[in-house]
Image 1: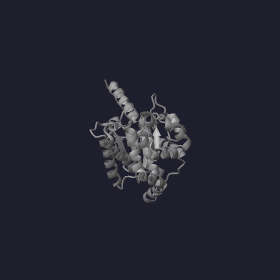
Image 2 (image 1 turned 120 degrees about the vertical axis):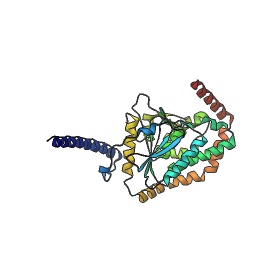
Image 3 (image 1 turned 90 degrees about the vertical axis):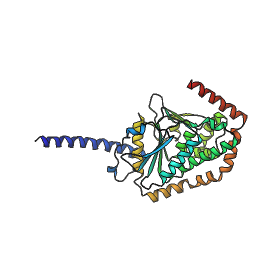
Image 4 (image 1 turned 90 degrees about the horizontal axis):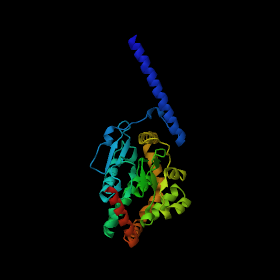
Length: 315
């Protein structure tokens, strides 16, 4: 009799859990408009506490503990220097070779920051050094944008400059908008005396609209989460915590990865092919143009002022 009672209790708990899971799945389907197959395989996911451990490396990639088809790409450094960019490329290309991985979620474990952009010190190392660095930054963008994987950015904090570029390289962008101090996002190059590259203007205009590009980019405008969502730069923002957002993004990527892999990857390649042709063809002109502006007196003065301000904040 005691065993029978325990079985009934477990049955009630299991039924309640299935009800919660089905409700969560329905919310995702309603948001995407996609009728996912095999919905019974999509379960709420939680991250291992080990992901919060201190690591000496600026980027780590690991498989999600209960959905190993999803890789978690975690940034541990707020500003991108040359070494960070090189490591991200190396780690991403290794991940691409694993056929068991179908999707990647890009996130960070930094307090209130997804990515603060380029390390200002890279701007001050001279034209040759910066040119090499910018080529590497372009490669970071390319490996993400041309990836065979389903990709999504899960941003819990500020995503400025290169942070916005990394998010735009992904297929989907998610950001918290209902926390006490939500983050901001945008291409702020003009505010530090550097023009927005041609390919980034085109991409921003394709994601939002050319009119939004004309109104925002020449001002170096940084957007609130709500503003970015209203123009289509962000796909979903109604999350109450990073855990809730990460959980949603993993389940969303699991759902997208139910499609046949070869057909899905080829379709995405075709969708992004024209932009990639433009991006690759413009490399030499892009590197020369941005390097020329970076070394000009106007940009150098602004960048040195920004570095001095950051140094004062650390004191």
